[in-house]
Image 1 (cartoon, helix red, strand yellow):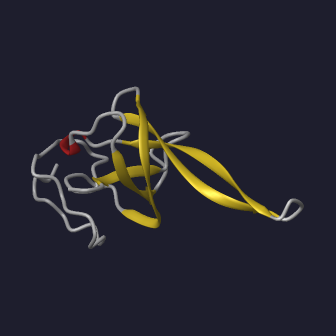
Image 2: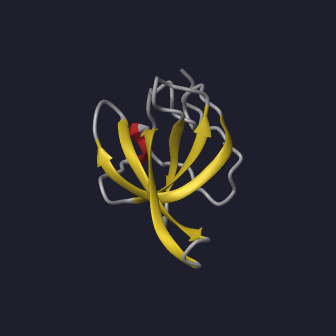
Length: 112
């Protein structure tokens, strides 16, 4: 494991100050980020380094000619060097599949 902090290629996100030995950390491990970048809230911090991310968005309903609010929940991997808790606003990025339901990793906290 490398303890050197890598540049993940997202300029709006600052890296963590702590170090970790997580192999799925985008800063200290071997996982790479690609594709979709989303912003939302971490609503559940569950199993070992895994959580549930929720984002809300507007969807236009053509039949009633108005917008409706929808939400989607995504399982994410949470590196221990970020020191997050439930209710934090975070930025996630797509990665290769880590497990059956996890293909996103948290890359930073909004507002820091």
